[in-house]
Length: 96
Image (cartoon, rainbow, N blue to C red; front, side, top):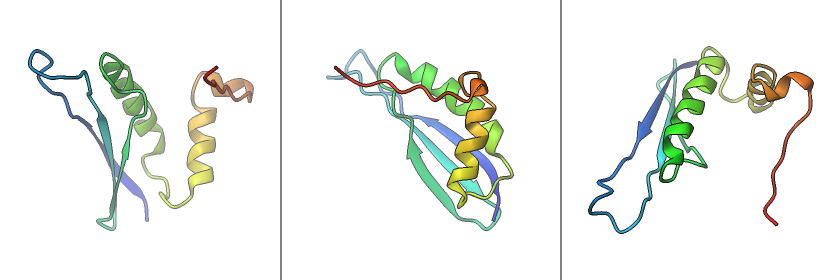
């Protein structure tokens, strides 16, 4: 099984009439066997949605053709192909 395409869906709402700025971004990963999986971009609320969409597009291009069941290989490739991953240092942020 291979990843063939990734759809990035901006679930935008009308901010003028909305009671909140909730703006999720959903990611649909499609495979050559017709199986799809869904996920959500974690920081994509309010104005962060635009940044989340951009990051999802960049990461999607990296994993096309990979086996969706091989999570470790996908993580490793995304890490190595992005700017912060080049130094082999992982960056974590925690709330204080």
